[in-house]
Structures are given as C-alpha cells and as structure tokens.
Amino acid sequence: MNKEFSINNAKKLDKNDSLSYLRSQFNIPKFKGEDAVYFSGNSLGLQHKQFDKYFNIEIEDWKNIAVDGHFHAQTPWFDYHKSLAKDTATLVGAKENEIVSMNGLSVNLHLLLTSFYNPSKSKFKILCEPNLFPSDLYVLHSQVELRGFDPHQSLIFLPTNSYGVVDESELFQTIEKHAHELALIFIGGVNYYTGQVFDLQKIVQHGHNNGITVGFDLAHAAGNINLELHNWDVDFAAWCSYKYLNSGPGNISSIFIHEKQIAKKPFRLAGWWGHSESTRFLIEDKFNPIPTAEGWQLSNAPIFGLSVYRQSLELFNKLGMKVLIDKRNDLNIYLRRAILDLNTISQNFQCKIITPLDSNHQGAQLSILLRNKGKEIYSYLTKHGVYVDWRDPNVIRLAPVPLYNSFEDIAKFYNIMLKCI
Ligand SMILES: *Cc1c(COP(=O)(O)O)cnc(C)c1O
Image (cartoon, rainbow, N blue to C red; front, side):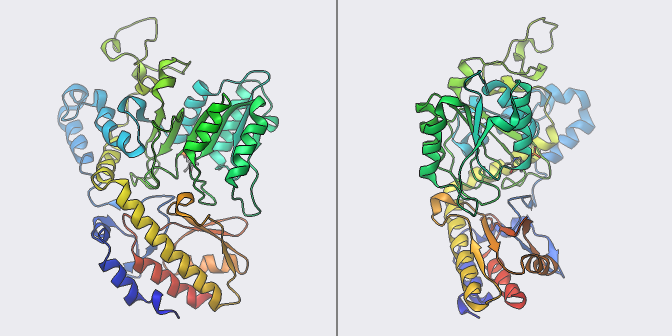
C-alpha cells in the first residue's frame, strides 16, 4: 500500500482544499452508517440540503393563492423561467436571450433538430461521435427518417482508436472529407462513455468554414467544463440539469440557440408559451413567436422542477466554474495516480484509463477499461459502498465531482480496491 493513498494523507489534502466545506451542504448516501463513495454524479448529481429553498415557496404559493400564482406568486409563474436566465446564461457563456429551460433533454433535441437539421438531397448527413448515448442515436435516426432519408445511410461516425477515443486531427479531416454531404455536425461536448472532452470551438470553426450547422449535446458538459457557447459561435445546444447540475431525477433541460440563428427565424414546432407574451392569452390565428430562445417553448413551465434547478444554478454561479475546474483537475490527477498504482500492485488488475490525459480533453469522469475480472471488481465495489457504473463490455465510469467529492473518497476507493484485486 502506497502512503500517498492512505486515508490520513487524503484527509490532509482535504484540509488544504478551499472547497472542502461544500461537501457538508450535500446529502451523501450512506453505507453501513458512513458516507458512501459516490462517483456517479455524472449520472445523477447529489441532493443539496437547500434544494428546496425556492421549491418551498412555490408549494406555499400554490397552497395559498392557487391560480393567482401565475401573476402574483413571489416569482410569478407566468415567466418563472426568466428567474433562471441570468445564472443559466453565465454558466454556459451565453446571452440571456439565447437560452431557456423547458422539457426533457431528448424532447429538446427533437425541437432543435426540427429547426436546425435542414437536409437537402445532396447534403443530408449528420456527423456524430461513435458511442452515441442511446437516446441521441434514436433522436437522430428518427429525425432523419422523418425527413425521408434512410437512417442507416445518413449518420457518419467519427473514427476512433480501439478504446473509442476520437483523435482530434482525424475529427477535422473527417469534417473536410464529408463536407459536401453534411447537413449537420452533432456531437456530445463530453462523450458519456469515454469521458473525452472535445474542442467545441474548433469543431464549430471547421463546421462553419464548410457551411455546416453545428450543435452539441452538453448533458455531460454543463457544470463540468468551461463553456462559452456565444463566443464560440455554437449554433445550438441542449443539456439536462440532473447530472452535474444536481437538480433532481429527470428534471428539466435547457437549450441554447445562438442569436444569429434566432434572427433567421427558422421553422419551429410551436406552442402557446413560445407566443408573444402580450398576446399569449388572446385568440389569435397566427403564431407570433417571442424573438428569443423563449420562442421555442411549447408548454407552460413546470415550476417545481425549475425552482430546484434555480437553487442549483445560484450555487454554481456563486462559486464560478473556474474554482470547480481547478479542484476537478486535482481530484482527477489523484484518482489517476491511485489507479495506476493499483496496476503496479496486482497482476490481476490490469486496467487502462481510456479518457484522454490532458486537462483540456477530460472533465470529472474517468473511464477505465478492465482487462481482467471486470464484472467481479464492479460488483465488489457496489457491495462495499462505492457508486460507479458499468458499461458493456468492460468499462467502469468514475466521476469525482468537485462540489461534493473529497480526496478521502478517492483514498477509500483505493483501499477497497486493494482488497478485491
Ligand atoms: C443523460 C443523457 C441523456 C438523457 O436524456 P433525457 O431525455 O434527459 O432522458 C441524453 N443524451 C445524453 C448524451 C446524455 O448524457
């Protein structure tokens, strides 16, 4: 056993960590009376102890003034989504008129592709990453089919190494090579399987130089990496709020549409909440959209979900992504060193970290490929209070999150691993 990964040493690292005070603000799942090691914040973020700060207000307003809450709640429900706009925009580097929170993520991807996937007979293909999240694959397939093209001939997958990681120079070559037939580039900002972070700004540049629209699924990016969607000239993006953004299971998604794209007034599926606010309740025979991303809203907003997301966004912006990213990198380096050390200790445990090494190409998540005893190790971990997740054929994903994970979590993981490898 290496002293670097002793519980005592990890506790020292936690003491020197200026963000360690945040952990006690979260509810950490327990294992045998102690804090479990929670490395699944990339799937479902933990609950903040004040998650209900705004939620409670909405419950009370509903109880006390019911329908009057639409205009007379403390934060009127009529445009409740606006109370999240500033913090959401700051988090992803957007202007307030470019974002809105609504629906679930997959629904929003459909709405965005309806507006921004504009295939023609010669240019109808979509460039995407391999190891697409299943929902994204189904969304793309069905959108392609809806426009009358064959899904199995319309997606171009980026080439990868044998571990599923994309070489960026090949990525740009692939864009050039297929430019004549691409209608869209649609990529996850952080791949959910490998944890690879893409250079989004460069992808946009290459796309736009070739006349191709570029959109991103930021489910694993929002609250994890630095985003400057407006300045990078991203055409559109969407993300969910329940992974790194801790706003609760299945909670609301947000979208970004660049103001240049909004100005072009593309076709969108319409609903009353996207209609001009001054005439929303009149009976008009023509849809008159709000001239911002809000013009893509369909339904009146789910206030309870928004209220939880609102509290979370506030916390993120009070802290700022910069300090979170610094700690994220420190945790990540420590976890990498721990895993490499385990590799030297046991012949049985031969694992390969497939997530790229440099800090520009990784976020909180490390994906490790287990060459030996993969399922046994996974099941040992889950039975000993370590939350990680398994992806076939033999990958475990671990995501120490800077808001609530500690160096001690990593040391505990290391010491539990020592017993099973
Ligand atoms: C988590 C995730 C989703 C989930 O979609 P929902 O509509 O929120 O269920 C979709 N795409 C990616 C890439 C994800 O990581």
